[in-house]
Length: 151
Image (cartoon, rainbow, N blue to C red; front, side, top):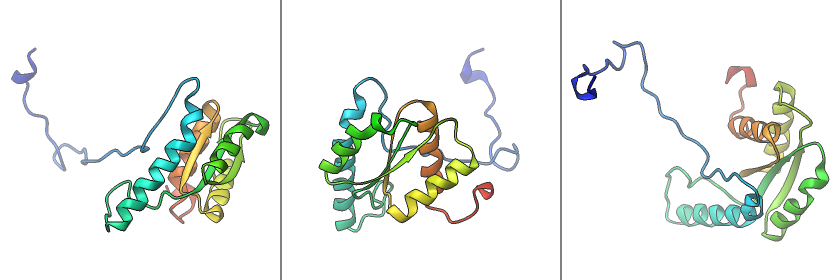
């Protein structure tokens, strides 16, 4: 059936589906060798955020994306040493968080406890699914101060 011939779907309260918006990370880079660009990418985001703040901008992405970074990696920390060094050389203050497996509530809370005092303004995940999943959960949780199960 031609889509133009279909009736317009109901929206709002009548349909039972509330309108929503979806926001995601400023950038997701995936693939062999992409991690090498993380220091420059974090530096560029920080510069853009500082410029926006200088202009008084309050737009998405104009939040403080400064030098403090939480680097989330797998259980073998030595595999992420090169990236921690490169981030530090790019002017970032690096806090680290290791994960040995799929994140659970305790791991996310530990990540939030690492991100907040470090003042992490950006999260960089290096590794497979568990590190990426943990970084996403920590990024979602770090700003709020409500218990994790309230999210």
